[in-house]
Length: 292
Ligand code: NDP
Image 1 (cartoon, rainbow, N blue to C red):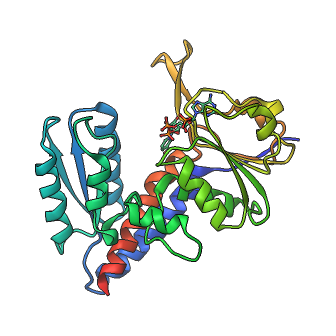
Image 2 (image 1 turned 45 degrees about the horizontal axis):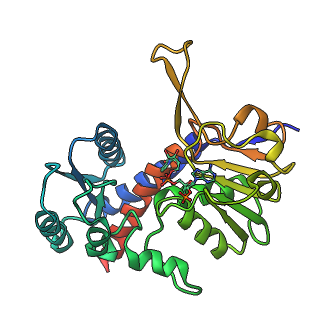
């Protein structure tokens, strides 16, 4: 059996086109341009690259973006002052604080200050708390897990009643992905670094979401035949055939797993492009919520 490859790049492009069309309609109707404020602290190259891609996506979709770059030694007080200013600004619809923050800053407190109507990353404790409670709706869902569920739905993978196994329990991917799957009526097992006999647990998965950050960790013989495999991992491995000397692979051994799975996402070109597409969708939603 060869798995159906879920083309995240194409699905993300469709989401972006839908968002761009809605943005154009809003602007034609005289409504404000959805605008994202990005807050970057310090000089991590990876964080700066992510923020730049988010701003570029805003421009491509006709949305606005305002960038705030603070020095690595900014005080908690200064950062909080900025968040409060952005919360109060009528011109800003979404606020994104690029994580991780430098160690001296209290990330939990910063995220809890973001107004829930502008929390387009979905990390405020209120949005996450609502996601974790039955019958409550968060205003925003974290972008990467939202992208994972969107890919499953677009591929036509049945979620209700399925046994979903989530590898990883981070605040940004594993845990919210598990909560979303429970909300879609899957039966969910969450695995982490202390899980015993991981291959045996993974073999029970009708749906596997892998988010641990370990190259090619999940082997083909761990996969239940016909399962849907969503690979969130982004890992750089040496590759002498590439000009850069490396290439990106996921947490799942793609070549082995695709022979067993029913559906699988590639890396790159699977979950990766969905994260920014869902951020754009959330930013549009934030503007719509603030129209009211
Ligand atoms: P974290 O490092 O925050 O979390 C990793 C999780 O994996 C932890 O819960 C950890 O367990 C678990 N884990 C680590 N080693 C093992 C193991 N040997 N067996 C079982 N579980 C293990 O990572 P993130 O969630 O931030 O990211 C995960 C991956 O997803 C990374 O490769 C990252 O680059 C990628 N990513 C991709 C995104 C995208 O847009 N496509 C966005 C965000 C992340 P424990 O809790 O016990 O420590």
